[in-house]
Image (cartoon, rainbow, N blue to C red):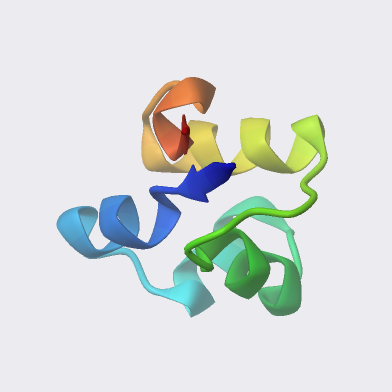
Length: 65
């Protein structure tokens, strides 16, 4: 199972969904899905864009269990 760290990283950095949408061009629905505890499907492009905006590595966005 793959779990998401996106919500925690966004909270730690004080980044809102609205700011993420404006900064990445990714839809709010996609960002909301990426913030869910469990990730079922996510494109690498999406993870790369989120990681770049948050200033973290792509692999920091999730855990494999």
